[in-house]
Image 1 (cartoon, rainbow, N blue to C red):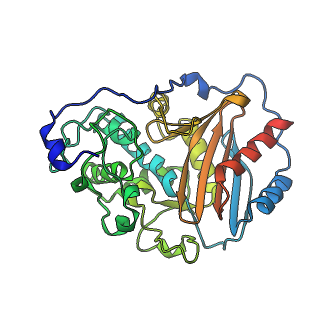
Image 2: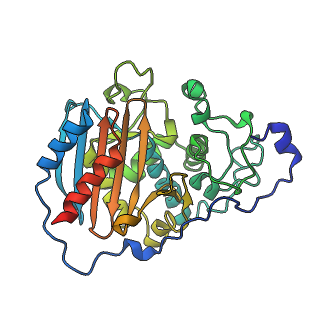
Image 3: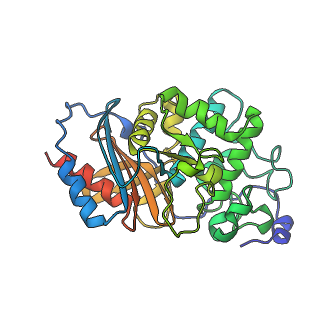
Length: 342
């Protein structure tokens, strides 16, 4: 990691990307298939199987296709409670930022010194760097015990690399984006995300987490983690149905014009597991064995995790929230495989 002193001695300029080759996803990946989609199966047996194998304390799954929610089911959560979407909230913040780009109020090439003048390399870090985790910023994920008490991040901790040089997942980068959104809009980032993302879709049961509603968010007992902790890096909660409707609308270009939606996945950086890649607030899973791309986002906190996946080949969105040790992505893939089996 570069120290503040070391960063100060380097030329305040961008570095060429030196990481593993990014994946270039053709926007045609979003295209709907020419054939009529097959009728969907009964997903209840799949849910029963997933619940038994995952040993979940709480589980929710929703399926969405072509503008309509088509199936959902939950277990172990009260009607007044919300599943934490964790880092999936990054995508909603990214949507709000990209809407500002569409309005001409920001540019992806805008550097951040106007909003973070004391941050080293602020004149080299761009909005695109923050969206795609190439800023080099130290992240709260490297120091989780202090995340709740330092909501605006870790600029004083220094940098891992020169801006643009590598990919490294950074919650701090999205905290910076939250501050930029608030500064440009002149209102709290929570209000902007609520007005720009949730309200237009009529998602009255999804929430941007704040002091007033945090108690309604399901947090496993004994984990010692607050629902407020992620802040702008993952500050949404709701039902899997809300999540599926949100992601389906994003994939259908109802939140962003198609060219800007496409930028979310036009250049994707390897996340290190050989399968998943990150763009501008969205992830892609390259399921080579199935000749399939899945577009979505994942999120996790202690004792729980969530995922939303869109299969362009099937025009199908599956959202999963799980409280327990099992991976939500594996559960979501069960449902996609079930849909593709018939």
